[in-house]
Image (cartoon, rainbow, N blue to C red; front, side, top):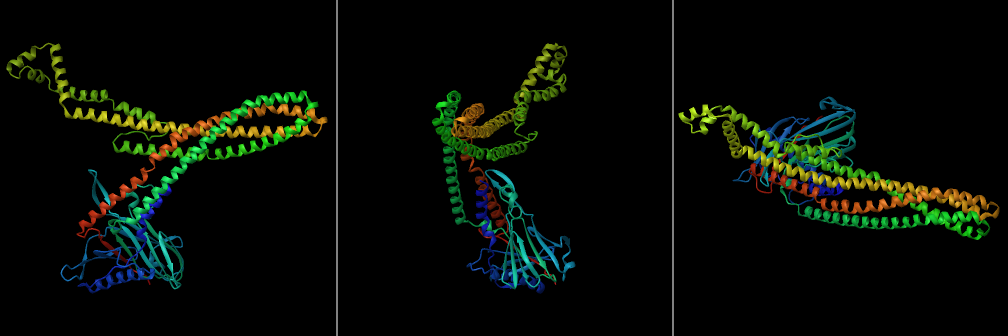
Length: 605
């Protein structure tokens, strides 16, 4: 499943690894320095694409552009917004004070130590440059009636051109390196915040969040570099990608079908093994009697001893093959139990998250304690306890009224006041109880608390039932693996007994002079053989039962749950598409376009 999700995400993000040229158009700007800096950023960007040999027609990136001019460490000096004039179609560039949506910082490490880049200009050594990206832009997305703040999905692409006279042995993380012999171009990509937005564990698939370049440098100097940030990737429909995802899901179905067939064959084999071992167990008594008769009738056994020797050789080989097969099964025990335990712990972690999100305080759920913890939560949700707590509050409110309660109950006038002073305690108690019950029955907060407790109790009971069901499967798998281990041990004993039997039968066939000694040794070995056969018969029966449970409680659940992770990732991607569309609309762009931010980092000489 992990590999399948990795392939799906690779399809969804593959478009981010290519750069496309952007048409500049005619530019007007009142600031000559701004004009020069913007042209420099655009030129570096176009050189990067041309150097990579981009042959795509048109452009992946359309719409408006914002240029961010910064120093060598990413500190922003100036932000310039480029917008197309609706009248003459020319691009007008003006300086603005708006902060970029993604913060880009650059770290430099020289010979293993972090340094200020200007301090190493002209020096030789091992250099590491790390580009870090921090996504600071969120929008509110409404999905299925629920509001959620989501990071706008920006794709970050950083490009630098490195002179081979200065940079050697260039390597990069989350980037592509192209070398033509005189210079290298490094194009890196990252998706800041996307891991969190997809709610995807790094154990399943790790999404790049930074770009790192390593090289040996001689006389360090560096040309300016650029970073492009755009949300346009999530504004486009990737039809081909969807088709490839459908094909992957089809492959997954085929793989699970093969797994189901394989388990079915293994289950049939385990049943045949159990039947065979029961037969062998029944025959072991006859073999023991035969060995006793062999000891008594050694004079007539010579021909039979030769036949027995040949038969025991086959038994020895079969016992060895059986032991090897069971040892192989035994070797998979730890992986099977470990995988089932990992799934169980993942279910418990999900339950933990759900309980915490619902405001239920509780110890972390484990395989050992989940039953007791959920029972304790159910006890706290008992409607009787909720009613008792509500009654205590209402009683305090009623008692605080004092005699006013009885005066009000008797009519509220002066005559009622006089009558209240003469009321017996029994009547006062009845009036008090009636007021308490009326308040409890009519108080919407009390009724809501009771309803919430009842709903929570039902949810906890359903959660516990699901965990109990998986626990039954998990314990059954543990029992199955224990049975396989016992069967392997029994096969070892059977093999040892067969080897002893082979030694005895060979001595029996070698001559009448050694016949008595050989038969007694064989007779002495029979208890060990019988013990091994009995143990192996028990183990094979457990193996058969375990395979039956694996098929019914394991494989079928895998088939039922196979869509969960893929569906969740697909849902999160749709939410990110909505977030990108909302952000695009907020920037007054056309549907399907994305706002581009082109960062230009200064060079060093």
